Image (cartoon, rainbow, N blue to C red):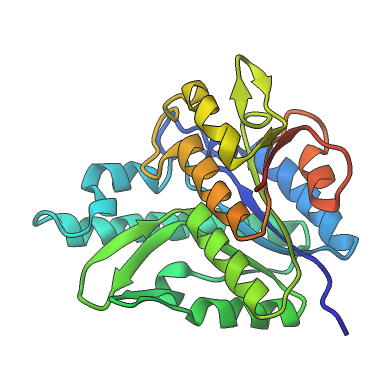
Length: 265
């Protein structure tokens, strides 16, 4: 029997936290987008959910420059702090999903992805596949990843989801799309939503990029778009949507008309 389509969704840190105020949750926004996940899940859509960290893990990650790995005497302790705060944010998201009766289970990147000189150990994919086979909703997030040589770095939620999208497709899953839900309605140029971005049109849009507000160590909109373009070249489209129009995320997930930006090749 063919597997049902699979949608990967990121709940952006810009949406579920106040990125300008350390450790501040936007509870109402989180509750609202989880309601939309629940509706799609109840209708039979298979989901993998990721979430950003906004003003949570980005705060210590910026302080200790964890993305750069071991750079000083505080680096190892700092990486441990970042990983702990990432876990705390994950528990907030998963707790809300469980409260709304979604069978959410964390798949922790730090414990299931190992980096080595040849690339990535693909342990995480098997765990996600096992959860999907059981009817669960795997929940991942950007995290500190550890290397076999003792160093470490950070993988953004975008990078985790894109990795999973490609690997799950290789395992026979019908990966339908990756959706990024944030505070804006999509990629904006002169205040208007750009409906579609392709590799050949992106260069002309870079002037519309602005620095991410508040705490963000993984690159904001520019990183999101460029990661999505790379995925599009491999055959999987991404969508950038906001939550400013009732049920917009739900409509994007299930293929109804929505407001947002499609990133395709």
